[in-house]
Image (cartoon, rainbow over all chains, first blue to last red):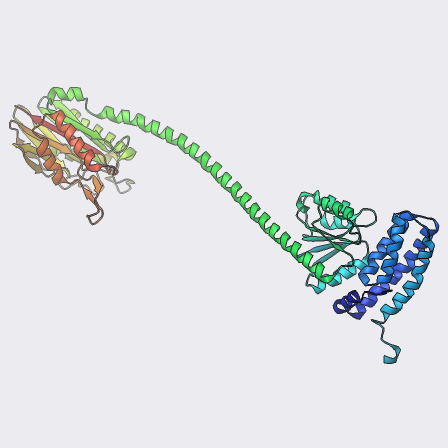
Length: 118
Length: 426
């Protein structure tokens, strides 16, 4: 599984620097914490419209940040929401957590210096 | 050029900002919703007073109002129609893009936005916007110019109408003045009773003129005068009124028939009538004149001239008697100047001619001459008189006029023209 789009990450680093990348990831983390809760609730309530809306927004944001694996997962969720097919939706939402952790861990590598270097 | 980015995601707004800034696009504006975008564009105002937006990057899927609806509303405002809209979308389905283009979008970019693609599309649409603005500005200039021209034409049209009206009034007034001036001239039928062999040419340059001729038959003889007043047109005509009235007063009231004395008195009357004998005179006008007194019984003709000559022809030989080199009535004219009488015995077949300088001063174009013109000249006039003098006087008049008009051709008339000819068969 490709977790990050390195081309986009590199583009961000080239034009904005590590600070900018970090700032963007911080912004993402804030939204993620807030919206994931909403997404879980929507899944519990089988609110397909809301599921599709939230997933669409995150799909775009993740893609723009180069967080490919997350973007693809949100795409799956958005399609489910749009098609009003909520079978296995909770499982999909659940998978987000793991991918998110892995993604953040990998992306941090681009702006957090290794402990050994400090 | 100013770019407005409309996206509900602050992450995407921040990324677009970073990318565009790296491409040198620094005049960026941001809206988190369609409604915020409307505020920037001042959609509710007929005239935009804020920053002029040259390009909009619009997200399609946004809460409250999506980008397609927002684009459609923006395009419905006349002054915003030319702003290109690029849809930035994660949904590149045919259906979605078709709706975007129908709403007036000019292009689209699929998320994640790639720098190269973004720059290419932004550059091309900003160029298009720049060209559109230039063309519109040029069109506005043209419209403005056309309106200005129309306004100017309207003013010219109105002015022309007023001028035409004023001109008509002036012409009518001058035409009436012409009738008055003509009434000052001797009655031709009456003149024929005492000068049966004669002709009178009186051709003002304009409707009225500064020339006049005068004849009056008295018991002791006939007074004939030709007067050339200062200028021509209306001012000249006013002078002829004074001259004519003065000649009547001198010859009829004062019963003075001596040509030299007539000129002297005429000099006095003109000077005093126009107060040109005073220090405070505002005008300086006068006249040249030639006066003859014919004593038929004694068969003599006495002539006196104020800068105008007398021509007479005997046996086809033309003689010119110059008048005194003094004009009449001007400030500088000496009121005591004694004009010279010249008395000529009248013999059978002699013809006499008096004229104003308008005839011999008439010019025509002649490139061989220093100033490109040649005047008719007194010499040519003398020759003409010599040529026609043997003909009946009505024929003489015709020939003299023909010679004048032939010489003048298409050239302008310089002055009023008066020629008086008379003769004695017996």
